[in-house]
Image 1: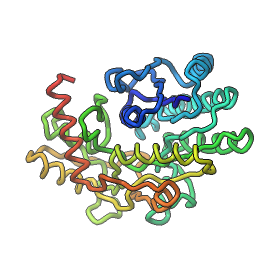
Image 2 (image 1 turned 90 degrees about the vertical axis):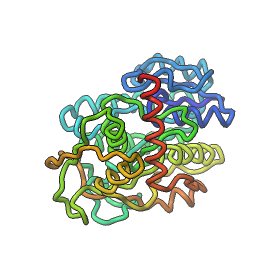
Image 3 (image 1 turned 30 degrees about the horizontal axis):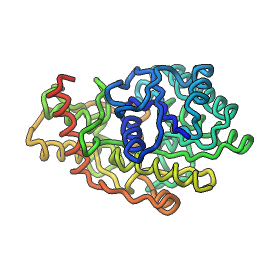
Image 4 (image 1 turned 45 degrees about the vertical axis):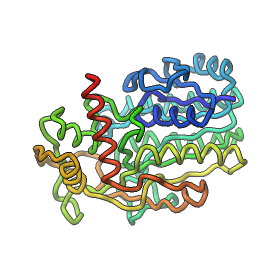
Length: 328
């Protein structure tokens, strides 16, 4: 049987495809290449160019490849963009996911792992935030993901589609072997932006908001290495195959770093004192969000290997240098 990875030519999805291929799994990728790259897909893994909302195409793909599990990454992910274009986010993240879930149910897919986000919590009332805490998104992005979580739970209850919902915190870093990484031009991830600035690919780093109720006034986030996140997905797939019940789990490390912490670490590791400019807050950004992540470790037996900000940044910097060398 085969695992379908939607968004498998994108940042996190391409890491997932490499991990599955490394493990000898049969994999097929569905990606519309809006933000993904065909060259990032692992060798010998078939890539189907298309949308998750195209039910006829997805149905044919599921049948042709005898897909029994889906890992669903395909989504729009930029919080400020979602504030400017909420309907586009509800179309791509929510409506297309509904179509994918319906097609999966009709064609007998047994397991689905969904890429959700800490943005479903909004501005949490306590820290670290746990899976049972209140969900109150402050952006259309977070709402679009929460709606899909609700649909998936309801479809699971009605149709027996067992699933794991993984709520990501801030994903960063790159494949330690240098095969793939964050490659999207104009990406908004802080570590990506900062390493680009260190290598001269951006003129500066903008810091949005210096008056938050945090020790240095900038936002605090829980950064997780992309390879550890992918390992959580692999563990979730094994868990479902072993008969595990549907569940929702946080994916983070349980400690946070401020925007200024990250910038200073990038400067130290790169040896470059790049320009930083301060601006007002962005709509939809909570002051602080850090994961309570014990449930993922106990449920999945997940043991992170790269739980270190300096390591995350070093891998991101190495990938960015590689992109420069290859002219990408």
